[in-house]
Image 1 (cartoon, chains in turn orange, purple):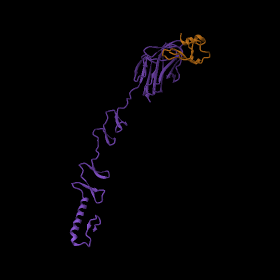
Image 2 (cartoon, each protein chain N blue to C red):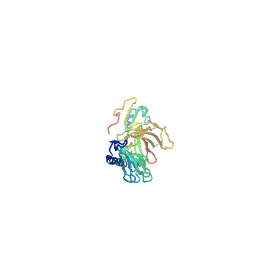
Image 3 (tube, rainbow over the protein chains, first blue to last red):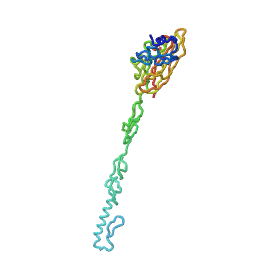
Image 4 (cartoon, rainbow over the protein chains, first blue to last red):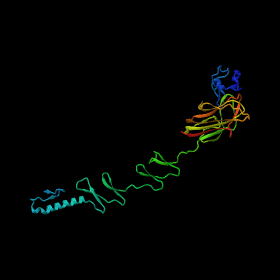
Amino acid sequence: MELWEKIIEAYPEINPSDHFGQLGISLRDDADGVGAYIAKWEYSKPIPSGLKLGKPKK
Amino acid sequence: MATTTNYGWTTPDDTALVKDGAAAIRTLGSSVDTTTKNLNPETTLGDIAYRSSSANVKTRLGIGSSGQVLTVAAGVPSWATPTSSPLTTKGDIFTFSTVGARLPVGTNGQVLTADSTEATGLKFATPASAGFVGCSLYNTTSQSLTNNTITAITYNAENFDTDTFHDNSTNTSRVTIPTGKAGKYLINFMTNCDGGYSGIWETWLYKNGSSLAGVFATPSFTSPYNYGAFVIFSGVFEFAVADYFEMYMRQTKGSTISIYNNSGGGFLNATYLGA
């Protein structure tokens, strides 16, 4: 499951084609093998459990 | 004894006896001879004389050789060979080190350059190449862009790369500024995206991992024919040595979508414009 799908699973009010940036959510993938991570979280609700802010170690 | 006014030659006194006349004349004649010789030291054709440091004594200056000119050295006249032009060849330049010196003409295309390590401070040198500097990157395969994820665009092939700006296997999204190439760059980016949806394409130029150029969003795109959308980004930006830049994109289709940066479909070009 992709990161964006986990977020939608936690918050069903978010639609897949919503602009996450306008919701205060920025997901980023530096194409360096680490994968997608939450670069910014300013959504009205907390980061879903199991997910973290910031780029994880490779 | 009386003496003459100018040279101090000894002459008989008015009261001297006649018997002393012969000796007096010899003394006077000897003095005149000595003085005359001192005033005329020349011995050879062309000799000249000049005043010495002693009164009533001149110094002989022997004639110089052909072509020499009369000059002054150490406060006295002397003969010297004049400095002649050292130039021998078409295009030679008359320069100076500690004396006049010849700088041979350079080869075609060379330019005159100041160089303090040269004896004359000048040299002819070939100017630095004004050839193209930059890179053009593409990707032999498509790249998947995950929904709503700002993703670095990668390139695994190069049309050209003059100064190792890019590596096809490591950090393939990066273009890194090499030593000696800090300055302004024209960046052209184009990618061909899957079409057939209504959404937003956003494109960023990142410098050293952070957004530099802000967001460039294309209008929502819906293709009735399911054709792809071309996203184009262009601008002039300044970088320092070891800076790296990348292109990032985000799409909001609601699912993963592909972009194509293969031959003809897309590219990332960087052209060095100068410092």
